[in-house]
Length: 220
Image (cartoon, rainbow, N blue to C red; front, side, top):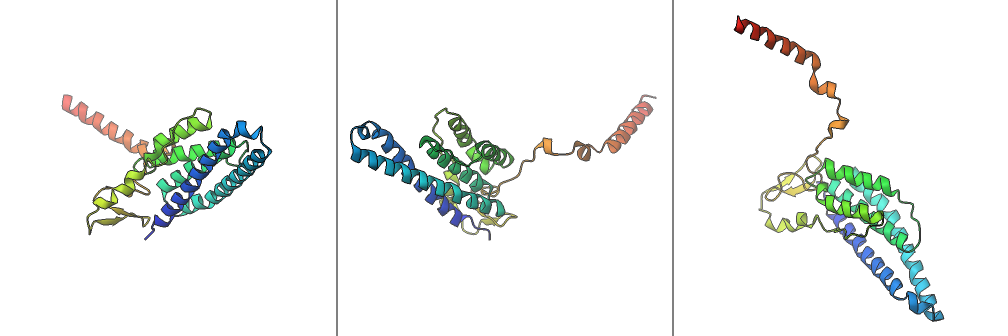
């Protein structure tokens, strides 16, 4: 069984760290005027800023390995969530006046692809993705990182004996979900398909000729 639960606890750990760092940034803004008149406050705020930057950089780097683990285990929804959390740490660093090494546009494209290829799982985060995209472009919008929480709140409704397992080994409740809540059903994009393989042009033309001949015989 390819269980997602340890990664779920990792996600809660990152979210907790994110809350602390965001609160630290709010405190730095509140202390901005005071530190200009007090040497003690200046030292304290600079120390807080340094720790905030350091912690955000550590989390940002660690998330690369976590995302890679999600990819290796085909956990599409969690992968999208970790990408979004990674963007949040990038924003923390940006607000602290530091550039991160995160390729923001590439990260946003990856989240978009996951949301639209797997609408029943990663797709639950589409609104969060949209808010985060605006946020990275300077338009401050609230991004609900908990928009997929209904997946976890559905487990208490599970009926014993109805535990299912998808082709990747992810467990899910057949009581509340008609497909895996981690990877979901893949909706392939038409642009990535070879139309010639789907149309079978020779067979189509042959069938069309047959129908034409039948029509002529019927009219006679």
